Length: 120
Image (cartoon, rainbow, N blue to C red; front, top):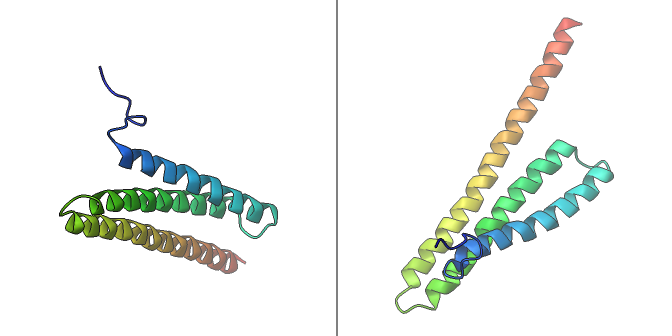
């Protein structure tokens, strides 16, 4: 009989990733909802930021739990350092991707304004 993926006690790291994603989603969506209500950011920006923070929270929590697990094992120091490095790289990659997407959005906005100005 197949074990469920999420409630499988033999896979605590996956459960930690899911827990981190949920906690980050709750926190970031609440913060961004307030910002949208106060008209500090648009709904699109809020969704993008919430998705980014949720992903980063999932990566950070999973990497932290896996690192702690490896550190508790004999000879697990190299695995622990590798795991934390991969987690850091994942979070950094999301930041770089978000920056590139923001630049693309700004570029499109600038191009739209330029086209409108030329038409007038």
